[in-house]
Length: 125
Image 1 (cartoon, rainbow, N blue to C red):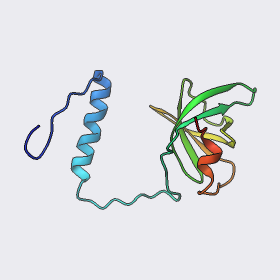
Image 2: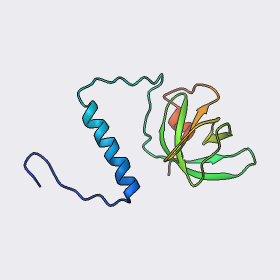
Image 3: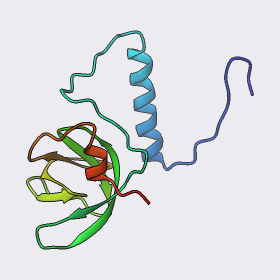
């Protein structure tokens, strides 16, 4: 412990360390700016982040829900679905609209009720 702070060790490969460094630099450079979230719908991190992807061919794959909103969901899975793929995350259907390092984003076919979206998307274990 250091007065006014703390020390910790990060176990990561060089690529992960580089990514973390870029994030820390961005945070330092933007810490005093009141950057508003330009998203239309508030994103939420679910308490129970486990769900299932259902693909058009009927195959299913477990996934981790990174975050979700009334308009879509970001997931991490053992596969990265191609942009344009129609699938269901839990009981909510949508289209893959973006890929990123951790997974991919699905835009729902229709806006979901924000108070019910977590029940549609995630599985309580």
